[in-house]
Length: 258
Image (tube, rainbow, N blue to C red; front, side, top):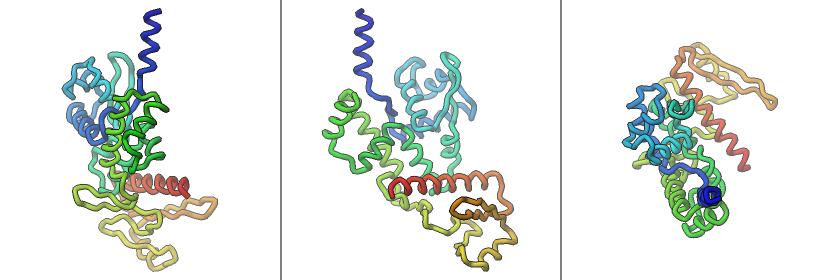
């Protein structure tokens, strides 16, 4: 009976899960994992030791949970054979992507944790005062006071690092400005052969035809035409996929807010 009461108290006092470190620190830990693992899956015990933790320490396990929460790593197996490795999102961020692609990937990572995404929809960047937020977390969600304060710290730092406080067309860090492609932007991403395309202009289409390929996707509301270099390599296709992913995420978000 005493054991059952202890279990109930632990359940009551257990706050909802969230990353215990902010996104910037999680990315540092991801880089340390990359340097240690050389791109291979590694046992959890080895990973936490590489971060300077005791294999059984709560800090090491929480770090694994934080990186998983942000979508930077995946895992497989169980028990002593449980292994961690970079996720697709983690791999993309590790490849030093173009600034606008990186901006979108950081925003995706920032909003991967369920609670951060949930309160981002409710609070945005200009959230209510700390006291009101803590009351909401403790009273409505079952946080402890300490966990509520920690969550707000992680929430604020993560949104600031991912620049979610700026408009989706801006990304500013260390005084630099980065543009995220606009839904209404009909220009190709900057590059050696970037040109503005007028959908009604045969001249632009003809000029690109000799060294470009065109893919047409028939949709119920009209065709979507994608023009890309005929010499695009594997890395180029992956970068194109990143751009399209950002475009689609923004398009869906725009539909939800209309």
